[in-house]
Length: 326
Ligand SMILES: NC(=O)c1ccc[n+]([C@@H]2O[C@H](COP(=O)([O-])OP(=O)(O)OC[C@H]3O[C@@H](n4cnc5c(N)ncnc54)[C@H](OP(=O)(O)O)[C@@H]3O)[C@@H](O)[C@H]2O)c1
Image (tube, rainbow, N blue to C red; front, side):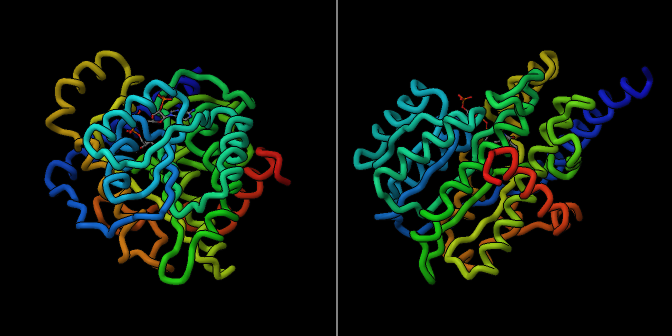
């Protein structure tokens, strides 16, 4: 009984303490300002969850630079409204919405198939969509929601698009995969025998685990691409604490308290998007230097499990099995 209570309470305490620390650091540091990025005419980007929040700002900025951006999302109304807003501001914007539910591996496959039928290049993939602290539930394929949406759906999406990404990159103009992770990965764990959190479930822990899984995948992918000499890089980004709808599943009193303070204390979505855009577009991150973990415009060190090659490989192989590729 006591251990069950501890298993529930510990992740909550650890996540809120980490959040407090991140917030304090954020309050005393200047938000990264994105330098002027080169034009992106002729480039094609996919941004998952680009209908609102950080993803919307990423799409808006890329469209302004002339890229052809495809928003992959669940909610068509939200996606179309985002496109209308972008086109109001920038008439020549080339932005479209395509249905993608990361909680369904079939939907991921359909999204990739319809993209590939168009024979477009793919220069940038931003794995941005995410859920946090959602009530316990399973994806269409039976995976825990945070693990399934934040990590596994993006794992399959990236895997299926790898050939197009590789073919679209060239020396001096690598294609890029940018995974939007979180500082919450620092208190995540990869329990290979319980990736689905069946033995003990905590929404707080599940979010942290999924963000660590994204980082392990991103790092392993980058090394594989380097070894193979492919013109494609992979990195992960922490956008900071950003005032978005991601926090809507917080415990209600805390959410209400935060909603009053978030405007002052959190970064604005455009500020959260700045490092994501830097990772996706900056010529300074060309080639090998395109890997790593980035926060507030800088490469950051992260926790040891992220660099554990055996853990990376085991997660990679298990994920391949989960999505039916092995
Ligand atoms: N905000 C922060 O402080 C913060 C901090 C660290 C990391 N992050 C990360 O930043 C990323 C963007 O989050 P945000 O803050 O911009 O939150 P947000 O405003 O809630 O945006 C999340 C996006 O993901 C989409 N999404 C959720 N489930 C999906 C699914 N099954 N299939 C496809 N799309 C789905 C949402 O669309 P619908 O729900 O409408 O379908 C929405 O467009 C997330 O990965 C998050 O973990 C955010």
